[in-house]
Amino acid sequence: MYNVPTQQGKLVVVTGSNSGTGKEAARRLAGAGAHVIMAVRTPAKGEDAKQEILSHYPDAQLDVRHLDVADLSSVKMFAETLLAESRPLDLLLNNAGVMAPPQRIVSVDGFELQFATNFLGPFALTLQLLPLLRAAKAGRVATMSSSVAAVGSIRYHDLQRERHYVPYLAYAQSKLADLLFAQQLARVAHQRHWDLMSIAAHPGFTRTNLLTAGASLGGGRQRPAWMTKVMHLASQGVVPGTEPLLYAATSPDALSGAYYGPGRLFGLVGPTTLVRVPRSARHDGDATRLWSVAEELTGVALDND
Ligand SMILES: NC(=O)c1ccc[n+]([C@@H]2O[C@H](COP(=O)([O-])OP(=O)(O)OC[C@H]3O[C@@H](n4cnc5c(N)ncnc54)[C@H](OP(=O)(O)O)[C@@H]3O)[C@@H](O)[C@H]2O)c1
Image 1: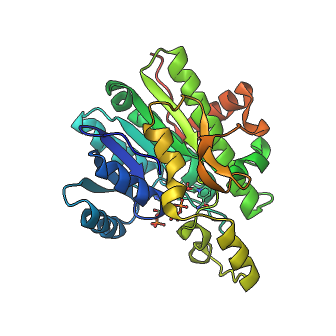
Image 2: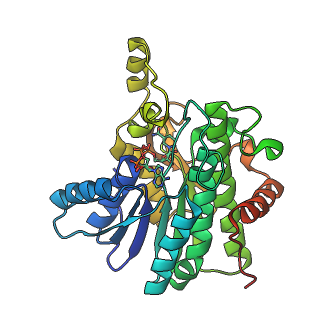
């Protein structure tokens, strides 16, 4: 098991930390001494998760705050509150995500829900928190992508999937966008000589609510028993599933701009390893184009410093 180095004195934000890999990351980081801000869209769920973590680590410093990453006004409010507190932010874990709602859903800002939740919100959040991340010594942003990014493409002519909505392709687009973003942020940080790393991770196939949340997002999905069995065999629990994200967030050996995920069974399970960035995410031109589009859509842009 990956050992999280001491996080004493560090301030960390983990989005979507009431369940799955986000909750596990919050637990492990708090256990290593970090002060963790659990950024969740439903504070009551966040409080339950906090109590669960406290049962493991009674001295854990945990602070539940409301953040709906699919709502740009919520992102702005969350970031402004942190900025007003002026405490350097050592780590931001862009973990919250939704997968493949059967019907196309639109966020309050009018964007396709997966693009809004998985990419535009984290993009806006990260840029707004940059002053705090840059104020930290060796600040880091770890962004959760997915192995399905490899089959994704950015459909610039139909980014919001209005013309043709295929749930998993819309998900793959949003996760490819995460990977392009994480790498571009690393390049920007390098070019501007910032003391900031940006690293991507994916959890392989990890048994979390994500795999069952389709129903709550608008349509029940019954799986045949054989499929459930196969899924179980080719998947892993949340503890190993969170390790790539924790490695990206805390390992002194992790490289800025790199991508980490499980190393066995085609990347579905296993110990954390450096993952080859898929062809779809290798072009700097795609990353800069997507960055400009995201700035335009979110109204949040990089300062010229
Ligand atoms: N599990 C896998 O096999 C797998 C594979 C590839 C990538 N991933 C990625 O891993 C990340 C974590 O997912 P998970 O597997 O741990 O699933 P999960 O247990 O469903 O966790 C997702 C978290 O995101 C939160 N969330 C969703 N929409 C949000 C919003 N608008 N604002 C704030 N929080 C929001 C959820 O909150 P609620 O509880 O309130 O819904 C939940 O806490 C996601 O980015 C996902 O795409 C997972």
